[in-house]
Length: 324
Image 1 (cartoon, helix red, strand yellow):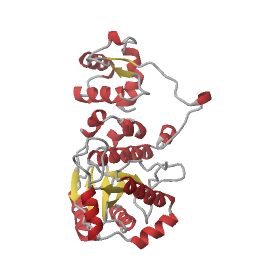
Image 2 (cartoon, rainbow, N blue to C red):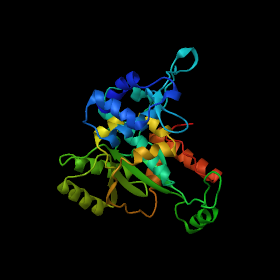
Image 3 (cartoon, rainbow, N blue to C red):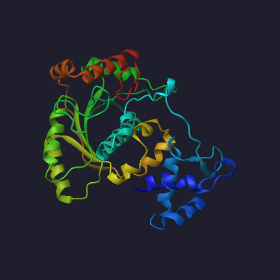
Image 4 (cartoon, rainbow, N blue to C red):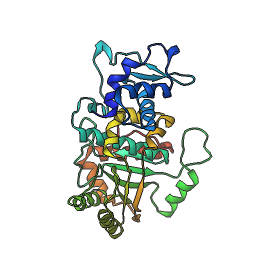
């Protein structure tokens, strides 16, 4: 049983119900150690208290003002007649497959990282229920990330830089940069070649090809082999540097996507991002391939419609791969 699960069971026995009687972090660490021992550092326990306090299903809540934790009051979740409603990534709640849960969390983390950099991800690899497939496809990537020229002087919602957009049109360049991104939890010496060429195949019609790996890359021979392939084919390769066991301890993918910027900062601090190679830009999109793919895959048709709507409104709108 991981630390997060242990705390879910233990904290209801320790935390007070009344926020006025809240326990500060230092005291809570002492009480937890009386039960769990000294196997976890102060920083690890404080991190888990903080992350769990943002999880509406956890037993721990943080006081609104000041410092301290208390026991969260249980709420009934659901729609009319008590029937729960599921959306994108909700299926994780009933999924026992550990790898699947890790993958969903990775997708959510990568989406949040893109948005922090004013890049707009669109989920292509998804089944009829809206959830992604771990196996991926060979003709479309997991995500396409749109890079727009944004007006840095806009005080309201992000808007396109009209002058740069018009210039791109007059010069015949793409109005938006589209990077195809393939996500992998990990790579190994006996599988990295297949993973690499699947990603290359799935992203060949986009302007850039990228592979993002969740787990850190510590095998120097493997890193050298990936770097060689990345340079040879112009594929960007990077690692989030997050151990898979840490992914297990994080809130669900849905909760990660709903976090405020301040809440997500605690997750971001766990990452040790490593750049292996940078992507090489292609001069143009493969329009013929894109036209074929939008007829084959509903998600690509949704992507084309989303891009068109953003251009018509002259502002980006993140839909997270969800069909509106």
